[in-house]
Length: 177
Image 1 (cartoon, rainbow, N blue to C red):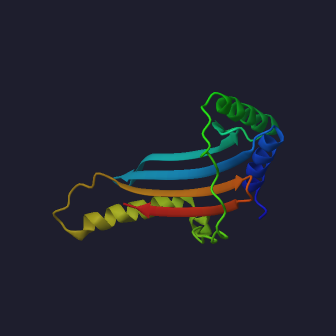
Image 2 (cartoon, rainbow, N blue to C red; image 1 turned 45 degrees about the vertical axis):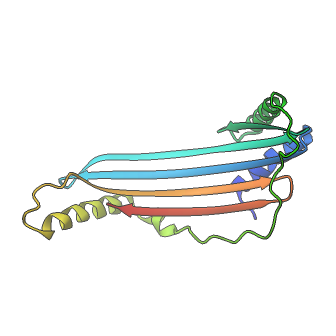
Image 3 (cartoon, rainbow, N blue to C red; image 1 turned 90 degrees about the vertical axis):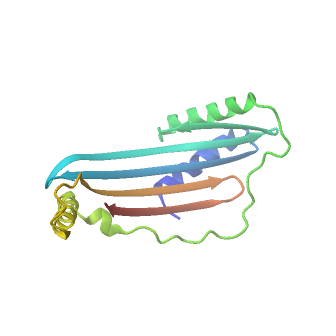
């Protein structure tokens, strides 16, 4: 797999292993969300949010430590490695702390639809307005529609651990209500 987020997760695991961790696992999530609310044919609110972060779990001497970062630079990864190891040093050892064994190849999930991203914001607004108009036209007794909304999201997840696991997927969904 050649993916920038998978490469970042691999780098975090390699750094923490080089720093002395017996086992390590990195979970990286990136998401982008759009929501549009329409009232009386006009955009009432529109929000675009992007999040990304990397969680790191380390196990050394039966102690587990966790840390999280949103900074993917070399310095940011060094800092999250240091923090995870420091956090682990402050936990009680437990012989049962381990990472899951890899049982089989993970299936490729085909849950990403590039058409969602390709659709313009104007088109997404138009869909919300059309839904509002359709609801109003359904029955003449319908006088007020509180609002209609369009929402979509794209996610990307990468998981890497020191036992050889590498998994990555992209997903996208959209809805109108």
